[in-house]
Image (cartoon, rainbow, N blue to C red; front, side):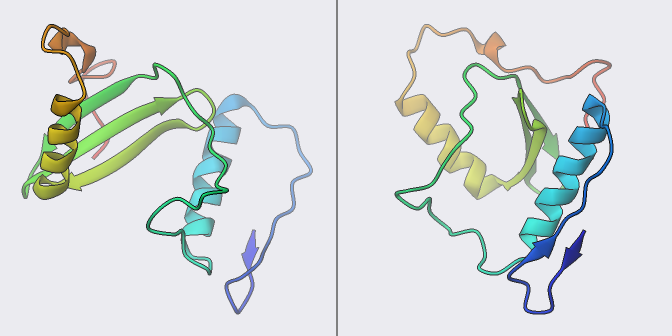
Length: 121
């Protein structure tokens, strides 16, 4: 993988068979490469944006030091996506979720541990 000098194009060469784990590693590398490219990802989705929607994926939440929260979302195609939210962002998300959910929904929908309980830092 190579990023052009102007950061507007990337050259990628793949000529091998990949396992599921290999493909997940490649997706992370591609996402890292995309994060360095121009134009940057827009701060709001474009009207013509394409999404890979995941219905009822897994999730995990873990408090982190420094008034941050790690939100992990499971996607069947992308694997686990990790978002580090500062308490202000988490509060906005909390308020939107509370306003748009029913009071009788079980809190067990959110897992605080994955597997052994060791979430990535």
